[in-house]
Image 1 (cartoon, rainbow, N blue to C red):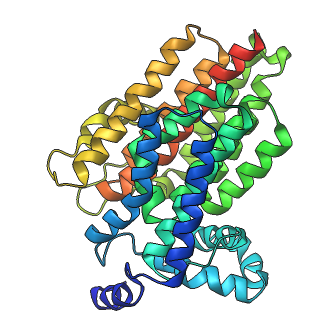
Image 2 (cartoon, rainbow, N blue to C red):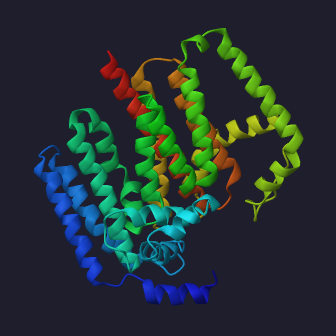
Image 3 (tube, helix red, strand yellow):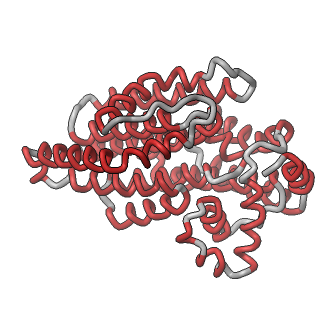
Length: 373
């Protein structure tokens, strides 16, 4: 989208007030009072949630015409899908246009249709508060760690204030990870499929991870057969890389516009680069070459997310198949995005998903083993 069209769209759909703005704000306040009425959260958590509601208006003041331009797609498609009784959206589902599919899911939610970017931010914030209210009502003591993570991790407040599919992503991340750890296969496959609709490539990798995790739960595979599976997976991957190496290098090269992409030779080369990319990812996250008011808090938040993940892993105090799966999940996906994505803005947005997923899985596993004792 060129700059002229971005300016035109921003002038029409920018952070302007409408009747919908007032209705969404009332819904948010009602959700907030329902949460406080449960009397489960401390005063600091309540203050953070209240601040989070009004952060939508603060972000509106610093919003730019060229920031996250895919948000206009939701403003176009949510009302279109509702007016057409969802028929056109459902027909387009398997085309796997992620923003269209996310807009279709949003259109089913019983919330007023957003008309401006400000409305869309409030729309997403309603989903965020609804998730917290759901978890508090479900079982506060059991879900307390996840609730506090949702409240205190800064990026949840940012993404639930600007709109976009990231809000939908972290809601799906919770339900997918919870169903995975609790071995609810049907529910997990449903959430995994929805994930694939919203984030195409990552979603199918998520479904593959579900399959691997459930297979690892079979007792017969917890002996020498597991080693055989690992060897078979390695040999298959090596063969596929050797067969499609030119195509793989072509896809990776497409994400590198400023730097030169050094072609990979084989699967072993890929593994070495993947691990080294993960180990050096904190340097890329910090983005010392391009510091500004937005990059600094983003970088700090992601680094804190890295630290918190390993704190939760250490607190498990065990090394087994499940813990190994958790660590490898984070290393593979975070390392893959670090290796693949050059643009920092795209990188931090894509890294948010595997980071949050790995933390959700770890917390849910911690809850599972605690209640299983």
